[in-house]
Length: 154
Image (tube, rainbow, N blue to C red; front, top):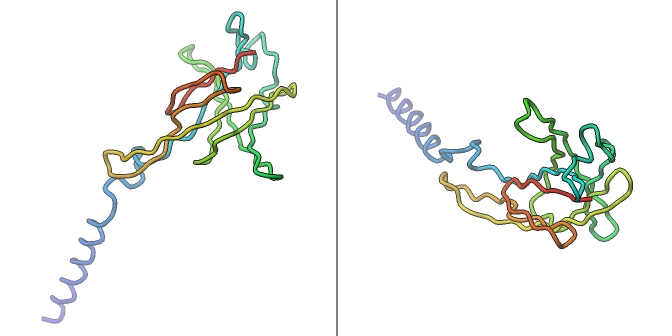
């Protein structure tokens, strides 16, 4: 009889533990989307100035950062290369949630200001996530999110 009681307690505990966990834990629906992809284009004709034969900027010379008082925090970025002619090569960076102002320094020293706004919402799984809603470049260009593709025109 004692064994049945122990067996019942173990099974009940396992069932309660399984039911208390978020049904979508680890799923995409519960992930913050705070990444942005950038393309640097010539204003006059839309030519890519980072990738391809008309490149003007070194793709490895970019700096993405924010300033807080005297502290500078740099963000890593990744290069995404076009495949099969279905998309454009981009530079991707993920900003920590709450980064309101960031800067991008191009390889020639030109600096652009990025004003980032966020939106939080509850997903179908009941998670609260935060996504980038807009990115303004030099207080002019506004790009809608989430996961916006920002065009820096030069």
